Image (cartoon, helix red, strand yellow):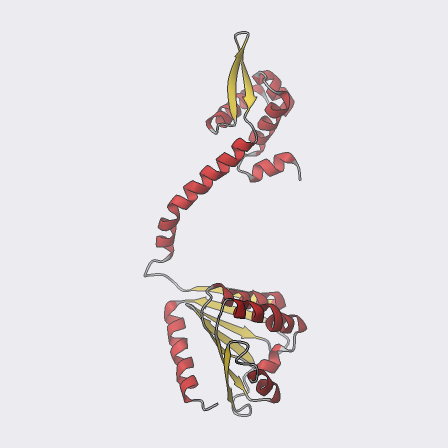
Length: 247
C-alpha cells in the first residue's frame, strides 16, 4: 500500500498526505519547494500547510529571514489518532444513551447462505448468556460447513464462555445420541414426538434477540430480531413448553 494511502486512512486527505510526505522528504523547505514536490499549486499548498500546522504535523522555522516549513516526526500522527480516539471515547456514554432509548424500534437483520447462518450463530455467543433453542438436529447436518462450525468452534466457544444451552428437538436416533453429551457440553435437551412436530427450522432466543433459521428446501436464511418485547414473549413460550415436557 502507498504511504499516501496509509496516511489517508489515518485521517489526512489526499492533498494533506502529499504535502506532509513532501515536507518529510525535503526537510526545511519553502512553500514553493513543497508545492513543486507535491505537484500542488502554491496557493492550495499554503492553505493545506496551514491545516497541517493546526494538527501539529508541520511547524515553521526561520533561516536567513525566510520562513521554512518542517514536517513533524511521524509519531505525531499517532498522537493525532490518540486525540481522536479520546474524543470519541468521551462521547461514548451519550451515544449509548441514544442507542438505549426506551422508545426504540426493533432492529431486524437478514442473513443468507451458509456463511450467513454461521454469522447468526456467532451473534449468539456475543452476549455470553443462556441460549434457548428449538432445533432439528438432523437438518443441520445437510451442510458440512455449518455442521463443522457448530460441532467445533461454536461448541468450544460456548463452553469456554460458560454459555448454557437448552434445546427442544424432534425425537430421533441422532437426537438421542446428541442428548447423551448434554452434561459435558453444558446443555439440556428435551425431545418431542417427531411425527407430530416435524419442524425443520430453528429458533434461537438469547439476550434481547430472537433468531429464526431456515435450512430446508436447499435454502439458508437467517433473521435476527433485536427486541426486548419479542425476546421476552418468545422466552415465555419456550419456558411453557420446557416445563411441560417430560424428557
